[in-house]
Image 1 (tube, rainbow, N blue to C red):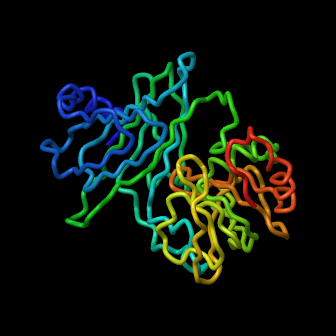
Image 2: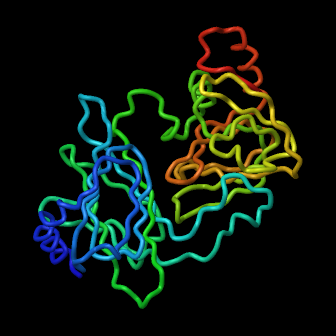
Image 3: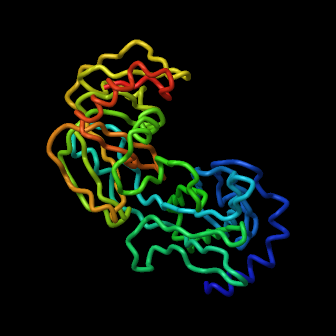
Length: 322
């Protein structure tokens, strides 16, 4: 189907589909089997900065309208989409072979961003671009994405799953999720430690370029996990103790695991030119579009010195550990 044809279909059917539109939310899950018209367009309103879209048996099209929370004096933002063509490996795993989670599947939909009077291609399985990650900017505070299902091929189960992130164009404060390539300052290290999903001592054991993610993938052997948000239920995480935080950042009892050293993949923007380094580091990473992204990685000796320096300071954002 051509872009122009798709746009006319959208205009002709959007008023009909509005009756079944989905309200404010972060994630959306739906099925094309519930669509009565093959060319129906279902609008979905997304008012969060990040979330996941899961479309089972895609049929017709979705129109995603992004309205993330922004400061009152900001209108425009950037949207990044990452299509999922195979399950991601677990955040923390024991054997390096566990990073292979199956064969790459064809993504059963095409993505178009809404332009002025036309749709602009953003992603297609046959567009010759291996990147799973695609980004675009809002226009006058508006951003919409059309997800057009590819023709059905028999009764094979199909899933169109992708993650999105909508962030302001202007960074007023340090944002660990989109930190640039420079080393973190002391204040940024402290904030990254207090807010990261994964904080651990570790050493780099492998470096790999990931063209599909437009990143350099660093594989770390974790020698002491300090925080693993959302990963605490993963039994036998590591053979040393790690600490759980409660809501107020105070520390509960350490938990001891009995298992060989764990590993984790952490992504760094390809433009940063990250490379392996000898010695032990403190890894601070946050989940971004389904994968762990590096925020800061000071050498362990530098971090230990900062912890001792800040230990008696009541203004620290949280209790710093090493």
